[in-house]
Amino acid sequence: MLIYLPNVLSTLRLLLAPTMFFVTNQPLALLGIYLLIGISDIMDGWLARHYQVESKLGAKLDSYADFVFWITILLLILTRLDLEFPLISKLFISLTLIIRLVNLVLTKLKFNNWAMMHTIANKMAGFSLFIFLPLVFFTKNAHWFIVILPMISALEETVILATTDRYDINQKSLLKKR
Image (cartoon, rainbow, N blue to C red; front, side, top):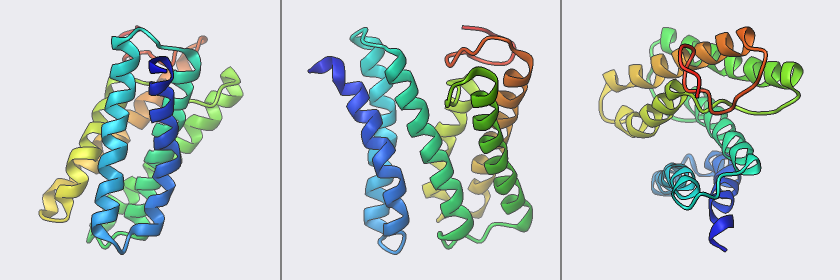
């Protein structure tokens, strides 16, 4: 049973992310789902590595769940959450959303794979999003962490996809292969 737990957690994230659209007017439910998604994201990878049950299916499920979470959060920020972001921030978020979608299509066209890479920048952007999005409700300057880092990580992934001939979902960065 333990060998399936990381995949179950990724699937849970995949299903929970879109439910955030239905609870935007219920802050505690939204925060609860948000925290559950973040904790399960950390746990699925840790469990898979710790118990040596990493698999291609698990990497894909994790990647799909990450992508759905990213898209959900970016769309929530732009359309549902009552956040007073400057127009430039909203433009960056919109551009990041477009770049993420282009990366997904590029990955499918070039490598016949629907996935999002597990680069260090993507992990840092996900961590910053997880930590700083709740802080945005209390301080106006925290929003830059959820605007700039996701943009940089999305652009790095674009460059990697455009310049590589072999897809490696676990490539660490533009400069460092696994």
